[in-house]
Length: 176
Image (cartoon, rainbow, N blue to C red; front, side, top):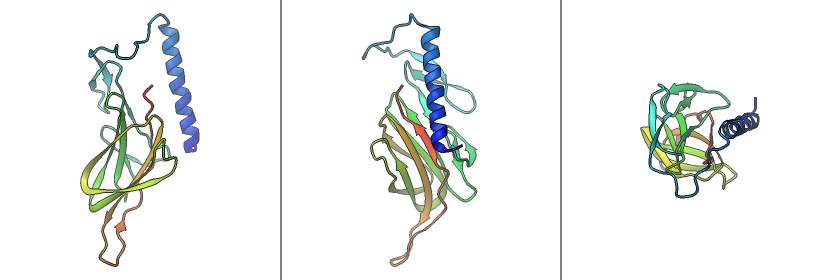
């Protein structure tokens, strides 16, 4: 199934869940801006099924690897090929941020490529090396795609040597 087909399926399922909530609880009024109280609710927020306390109205959404890859575990789920770094992503609606989790290599740096809602094209950025990294960016409402590779910087006239790209991660960062 293509990535576009998966995205369409996810959008349909999300819409159905939203509509069913409106049908089941039609007399529940939506809170206006600034009226959400700081009460907490329990939401299943990790792979072990343990609840995560969030402010009312807040949620996390984890990225998926629609084209495959091995799920290496963790929260959010991280995906890798046998010879690539792992990669996972999570949208935090209250912090209005996207966190990208990657690692598994001790190279000099990582190359991360991503498509954001405003870029509309693949953009590459170099990030510091290390076995476990988190890159946080301000969320823009829409779809993100990420891939990452680990590299060791080459000499003065040499190119860097890099792993293969990780599986592509798709993340829906819409706050609704």
